[in-house]
Image (cartoon, rainbow, N blue to C red; front, side, top):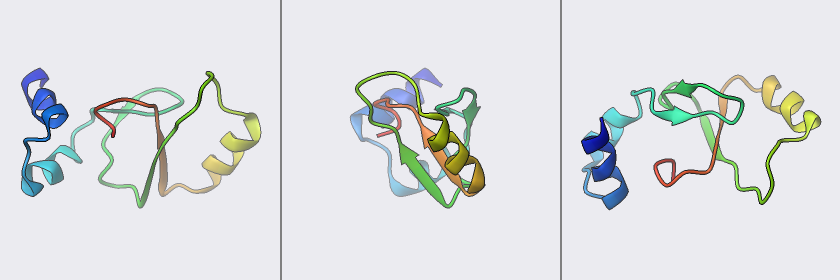
Length: 77
């Protein structure tokens, strides 16, 4: 897995390999847990200068089951 992720960080995966990567549980959700991004319609990357997400943001997030909010990470970008 580490070798695969190093290819991701270097941008050396072709489109087929990137598609396959979307099915692996290597993406960390804001509220914890690894998940694959393939089943989600909207994948958002959280960019915040401080930790924590307001409760009203969590309530809105929970309404849309097709949305995924990821933590900041070079792998996610």
